[in-house]
Image (tube, rainbow, N blue to C red; front, side, top):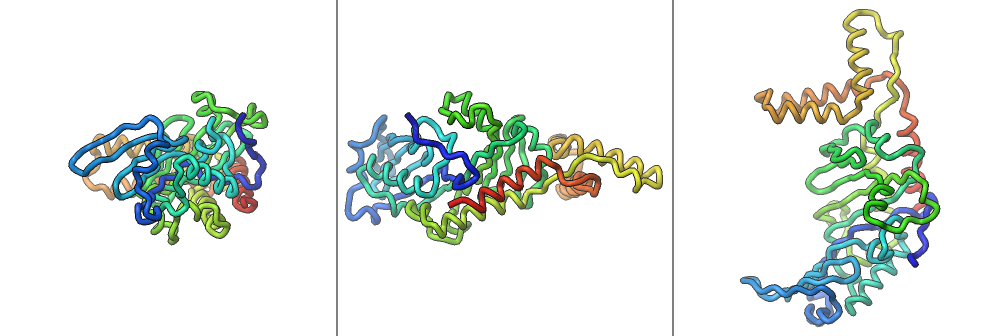
Length: 321
């Protein structure tokens, strides 16, 4: 029996993948190798760097070294155990940290967070893939749609991913709460991949995750990262503005471009790069910029699907506790 999954608009931001480093100096004189009896699936290693061991604790891969302990895995999956199609609230996060500490027989509250994923699931009117064509560019990120059901925004320090959680759950045989059985499950996840302290301007440890002030700040960050993504409009003709043949052609081209969405621009520019059509990298940048301007031209109104998502993300941020 898995824990109850909350699905209302309130309190539904959660931490998923949380990587940790527990330095030996923060272990109150305890030897890191003292946790070995509590690990499963252990593998011992010996190399020029010395002796180490890899094992499992709940959903976490645990790397044990003379100088400390590294944990890599999902906090949510460690808590729910049969999957994470649900919500690990701020209060439940504290319980999850305590559960891992009990499993390891070691207090991990002072462990440094080295990766932090913040996410939620949003029941939507349409399938998640139908929203992606209206999610445009984002400053300092590369947009990449890896499959029809998964959309990424990448840079060296952070990653945003949108995907169909219902499809993933069915593929992996994960438990889905009865209230979500027939729903379209849109997942929005913000991943802070490295330099967590510098990016968040805070000393982030395991116990920081369930601090109310920190939690509110990370929820705002999650909200703001989404708002910063360009939202595309409905694809309607604005016939009244057409006075010349040139404008008529541009209007039709813009309309067709808006019908195709952001993905066609990315695919076109990437193909040009692959065939080295231009000598200067700035030519590709300028072309993509010009096409993106057409994509968000004044034609049409804000898309209904984008309004739905923006309202949902706003409500999550407003009510998350």
